[in-house]
Amino acid sequence: MRLRPDRGPTRDIHVLKLRRITRETLVGLLVFGLTFVIFLSSPVRQVADSQYSTLLSQSLLEHGSFRLDHYALSRQTTERPGYNSANAPYQLEVSRGHVYYHLPPGSSILSVPFVALLNLAGLSAADGVGAYDRRSEVLIQAIVAALLMALLASLFFYTARLLLPTGWGVVVALCGALGTQVYSTASRALWSHTWGILLSGVLVHLLLKREVKGCDLSPALLASLLSWMYFVRPTFAVQIFALSVYIFIFQRRSFARYAFTGALWMAGFLLYSWTHFGQLLPNYYRATRLQFGLFGVALAGNLISPARGLLIYVPVLFFVAYLLVRYRRRLPHRRLVWLSLFIIAGHLTVISGFTHWWGGHGFGARFTTDLVPWLVLTGILGLRGMLAWRNEHKASSQLAWRVQLALGGLLLLTSVFVNTQGAVSPETADWNKEPLDVDEHPERIWDWSRPQFLAGLLPSAPPKAFPSLPNARIDFASREAEKYLWRGWSAAEADARWSDSRHAAIIFSSPAEGASVLLIEMVPFLVPGALYEQRVNLWLNERRLPSLLLSDPAFRVYSIVLPREHLKAGNVLSFEIPEAASPQDMGVGDDRRELGIKVKWIRFEPHDIDTR
Image (spheres, one colour):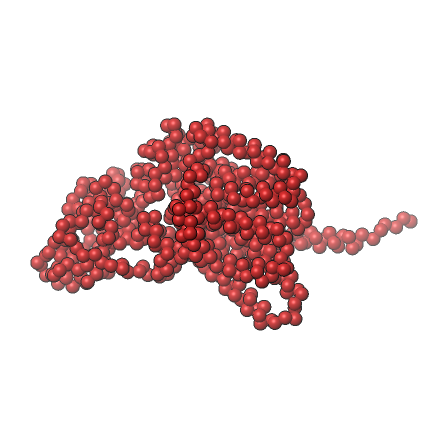
């Protein structure tokens, strides 16, 4: 009788390997599910730069066109207006008589399959007659962004598992997903960062896998990933340069195919730009946007300012830096460490070259979102060095080891807390325009009295000065009026100024003597057939005054009596306008400000009636 060889040990090895793969798959799915639920249920939505991006996806689906001419959109300008423009949305531009999405098209193209699926569920950024539907777009972006960032979280786990045990892999994944801009920015809407860091996360995974397992990178895949990162956001050019040098040095035989593939993609992009804009690169990609006139201030701000500092909003990076220095002799794959540090330094240099370096109305360190996959990679390598050292020094001080882990855990929890604030606290979004618009008053970026991440927890700081009242009226369209405006006011227009929030306020020193009357010429924001009146509730120094009910569509002068017992040396007159709404949400324009009242002027007059 012929005997079969004993395959027991081999079979056991295969069974153990299958169990390990199954366990890792389940853990990865749990990470994906948990983060997806967290991202989707967090209430703050930051649809700013990304507004109209899924409308472009819709246009590509319905009409196969990058032009948005099929939809009812603004054609008021041929150049990009400034941030917070009341005239036209800055996300659109007009070229050769056609309306285009001004920001990079990459995210919109990549989002087409997701938009198609959501169309089947009844969600579309445009209705059947071509009217733009902002509410649906916000929901579409919320779903797609949550899905993409949950995928990135699970990718972080699988990347960490190339070097770390399962438990540490979960820690890295949750830290990367909840303790960074992934949560507070990239999962809030389809910012260009969102698709960019997902592609960058795939790139980082492939690089580490190559180092660990010795497999070559596909030059075509690598070039395609990098090309699409550029199509999504031009600042990814730093990573393209760094990876090109890396491939040339360490995988030179593949460099020609890598360069050829990249050149093909770039040729297609240049053709797109020339066809639609008559120039080699779209306006958003212009190198002239980099001026470096404020480089020192911008670099410091991008690192340590209380509103935009990377080290303030992701403080766990102090622990990562400690790991890299403390365990530098045991770090694996050091060329990836140097590659990461080069990319981090290069990116910080580039974003500090923008005059508008704080990035407008975002949360925290938005401009450094693109670095998150590389920061996660340095954390993985640092943790691997730490664990290698620990295996060699098990007899060393347990207290020192525990203190080190406790400090790292504290910094991690702080990072999660800070970024959770950006995702769940509406006050952190309102911070950008209250009490003063950060774009018009960038000095607020350095104000530690009420950092953005604490906006929902700390009371608003009181005004630093209460201006004295002039004998003449105060023209709200003038620069002189700005010292009386405390919160909730938009930029001046031709002859008046809108409130752009449901809460606005003015400040002033007390009138000379007696009670006073405030005369105010204003008009409410009304929409025929939808919004018939605006109720204005008034408080003087947190004491309730009689409300006004405004229904006249023309400018009128209203009088408000200020009782003497309510007046102080410094006064805050607050306007609550609960029915304030944006023209965009009401379907009567592109303006997304919450308009309530439009004020031409105010004037204070003495009043001889004792109202007590």
